[in-house]
Structures are given as structure tokens and as C-alpha cells.
Amino acid sequence: EVVAKDGMLEIHVIGEDGKPEDVTGAKAKATILSDGKKVDVPLSSASDGVLKGAGAFKASKGATIIVTLSMDGHKPEQARVKLD
Image (cartoon, rainbow, N blue to C red; front, side):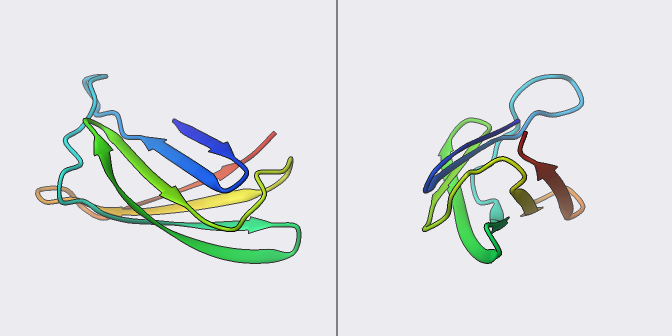
């Protein structure tokens, strides 16, 4: 799940079992494409299953968020979300 507000991004990482994943030590970043601009936002562990980051971006309709995530014991993942 992706929660985006202007300047704030929260990513909820859920495992196949439906439970939050342990994101301690995860390496993650989000690239936000909004209003013709590209902003990279580093993400860090905030709580069990939640990564947070902040940056100078607008979470406007049509913005694309590309999340890249690497965690121990898992293959690197990438997800793309377009905001409605």
C-alpha cells in the first residue's frame, strides 16, 4: 500500500501471508514523477512493515511513484503506482 501526500510518502510492505514484513535494514527509495519533475526520495524503516520518506514533491493526480526495495532474504523488488 502506498500513502502519498505532498512532501510525504509512506509504503506499507505486506508479505504473501498478509502480515507486515520486517523492513528493518531494508534499502529502499522511491522515484516520484510529478508535474514534469523527477524527485528521488530515500525511504527508511519507520515501524513494522512501514517505510517512510520525505521530499519536495507534489502527490498530484497522475503522478507516478516507482519504489525500489531490497531486503535480506528476498529478491530485489520494484513496484510502480500511478496516483488517481
